[in-house]
Image (cartoon, rainbow, N blue to C red):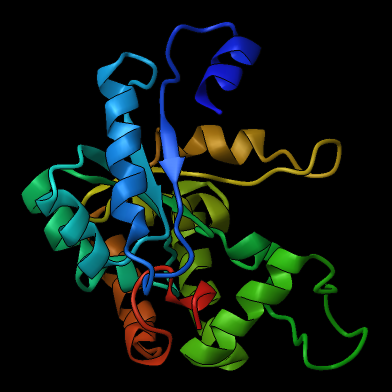
Length: 236
């Protein structure tokens, strides 16, 4: 309820409302978004955004006059699906991408460099749902050995700039077409990533850095061919 949210937050208008729809077979998402647009025109919402919509549905939504400002999608050096189709549409229409999963739950870090998680107790435990989810992405992309080669490339770049692997991983995605921001998860009291996150804003990857990371990323499979477009992993 929009009015309840406005009251709880003590604001006249919500800065953004992000909308997700599970079943594309039900076209009711257009009716819902038109209602949300009406609320925007009434001044109760400032901007309308999406979460995990694919390129085809994003285009349909835009063609129906819904003023979408962003789409929140999974995007990392391993999962480059947003750049395959969606980024071009976003560039043409001004829609921005807000990314999550950019450090893959922590897999893209020094903690998992030179490890073998397939051997019980030999490496860091995959003890969160995020780590388990993104390990499956690694498996689909090319497997742990290829992922180690990617981490080695990122480590080389990180040492060059005096930052962490995670910082390089986020900066690389922020440099991609139509990406406006990236969300980095925290676990309060356990992992807050303040230093690494602050370093992202001052890090400048040069052409050599970008090319070496792209080359390492491209050695894996195209996840568009395996999983489908953005958000399809939740609709299989």
